[in-house]
Image (cartoon, rainbow, N blue to C red; front, side, top):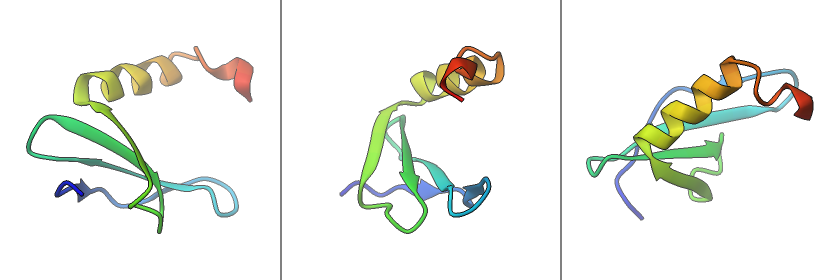
Length: 63
């Protein structure tokens, strides 16, 4: 498992807590709080684009 520096959890309502992390190789990680060994990973740029698109409302149809 890579050495990931995790940020503090981001929590919504209930138990919807997620963590975002990065490693020294330019990769970004998303995991449920407490399940950091089961993560989704991609480049930091891909994570940046995902967050910007969500903020712009491009995922609102999923709500």
